Amino acid sequence: MDIRVQKTFEALFALEDIREMLRQSLPGTGLADTEGFNGQIQHIRSVLDDLEAGTGVPKIEKIGGTLGIRSREEEYVNIQPIQAAGRLTPEARKALIAYGDGYSTCDSCRKPFRLDKISKPPIADFHQELAAFLNMDAARVVPGARRGFQAVASSLVKPEDPVIVSSLAHYTEFLAVEAAGGVVREVPLNEKNIVTADATADKIEAVIAETGKTPALIMIDHFDYQLANEHDVAGIGKVAKQYDIPFLYNGAYTVGVMPVDGKKIGADFIVGSGHKSMASPAPSGVLATTDEWAETIFRTTQMKGDLTNRKFGVKEVEMLGCTLMGCTLMAMIASFPTVKERTLNWDEELRKSNLLIDRMLEIEGSAVVSEYPRKHALSKVDTTGSFDVVAKAHKRRGFFFSDELSKRGIVGEFAGATRAWKLSTYGLSWEKVNYLADSLQEIAEKYELKVNRDNL
Ligand SMILES: Cc1ncc(COP(=O)(O)O)c(C=O)c1O
View 1 (cartoon, rainbow, N blue to C red):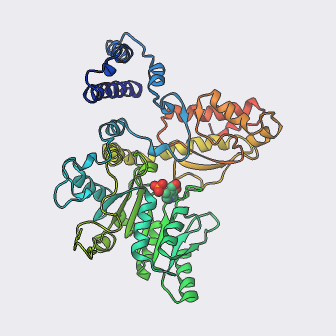
View 2 (view 1 turned 90 degrees about the vertical axis):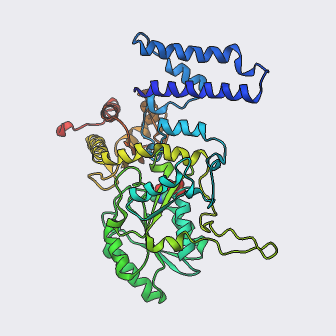
């Protein structure tokens, strides 16, 4: 179904739901049956009827505007670097409405009273599917990848313990280590801005020589947030085994967009971000582990009340009992079939990413800062020698570029950024990627920058 039609159906269902809720909560007030309300529902219905009959063109923009629906994906080419793979599926949007109440997932919570054990809706099954999806033994949902780092660091890192991270590690890894009292030790990048297995082993040796302590944990991002370069996680997994150091694989930029096999990588922990890469609302994420570590990370409380003797033995300490409740989790579950499916199309996403970068490199003075050819849909480019030259002489300065892009229906770049900036092609159709590439070259030529189309 056309995405605009799908969204319109959703809007209709939402309005009908709201009307029903108002009828139930405020019966007899007529609030739910005003002329405007019913008229709007009627109007949307007729538009959809026309569409079905093949006779009408829907004025979706108008309907979307009335309901406040964000329509950036349908009407624009959105190159926002970090939102692309987190955008919700229509199924997730429906789940948000249906499960909006905070504890709505808990209606059928029965013994042993824990989120990951609930069978209706099928939350327990989802946890198993998540673990299988990552080829790990156990999984929990967490409020963001950062809470996954925190759970692991808090379980394994003691005060003053060194923890190995990448020189491109995300700041939330630093904070997780700091909260546990540990100290980060960064692995340097090689000349291609990659973290290698050898450099990791050297850093471990250096830390042992300096502190007399074996690091308590290694945390490495498969693709980092600055350049989206791919780091040698499988090699680092082997090094971690050799030194007997637990290894946390940060899949914030991979879990949900490309296949991730925890056992193959040799990861003891896999952390993913729902709102970054799993078409889920914030804050959501996943923490998966092996049987070897599950009891440590998902340990249950031993605490007993001194006056009441109360115990809550089934609750997991690091999860604070239960984690994602209500619509956040249900939307994650609703998107999961699509998410699983789309990881199989990663090669195609890479072809689109490379097509765009190739065409951008045809603009004289443009460069790619990320490794190239691209292995990710997110890239950092440097247009200091092209669009920024124009910006310097333009009365709108750096904003000329955003003006030109938005005139062409392209959004999501950081307004005013004409030097080094990030963009993502994730989820864009071929048509949109080609249009984007054409537009960039068109803007370049408009301002007399040379475009070498030799590769075409
Ligand atoms: C590489 C990387 N790791 C972790 C995170 C944190 O993810 P979350 O927002 O799910 O906690 C981010 C978020 O920007 C990231 O880019």
